[in-house]
Length: 369
Image (cartoon, rainbow, N blue to C red; front, side, top):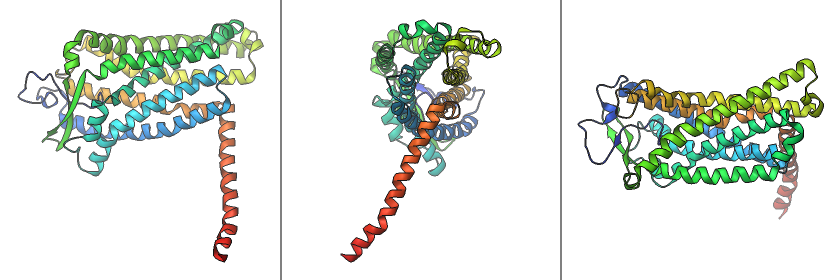
């Protein structure tokens, strides 16, 4: 399972409880119920992330084929790379859990893959969900700028500038998120009541030495500030873009009608749809972050811990969907994307047909020899 997904208790390393936190009898949601639901959510995440890896690879190939000198192609390519990396992380995090629960009757005692991913820097790949969020927000702002100030847009955000901004943001987010991944280490502990091992997280020495710094990054920066900023900025710019498009279609007198061709309008509609997907898929994260403000027991060690860990699983389901579904919007609404992909598939089929035609002659030569 993911390190922040269906995890159980957290052991501070100094105190030992009479029972594991997830097995606390005061929990409003029993461990049995949580485990039953969580294993199906984990299977869903595993399936969706597997699909996401393949689809984002296709996205990368198509947009690279379309040309990365175009600003929007470069941004969509960057988003596909980030989404693909995040999908790989979710795939690895849920691979062992899903396969062992559904094929082997429970997680193995040592959880080698889960431990390796979380204890050796692999969890840093989780930072790519924030990189993807940043790029999504940048795309929404770019479209809003293009339709609101079409003559200034190219001067304000050139392709090279967009590339530098994305690269810089990736390095910063990746570097800062690394400190969060060092907060906890993982070990697996067998739970007799469900006949399976679940991950237990314990504070690392690094966290003990730098707890204030890590907590600021984890709770304030990555937990609240970035997700809220991404969603708010994307929502505002998407609404403005949608209103401008609607006015252009209704009265035919907006600036966008004059300066934007049919293909640009179709591209903008596609990006508005993708932005809406991003906002919808990030709302559960916003909700789970604000809930503890009104429900103090909705936390690790609280009476609603099992419910909280289950809700975190749901959040990861939405994050995985957000990283996997863009392909379908690109294909359904993006003419260039669809045409390019179909052309690539046609070339592959022709090559395969040519190989099949040549096989009989090769076989005949081999037979004669």
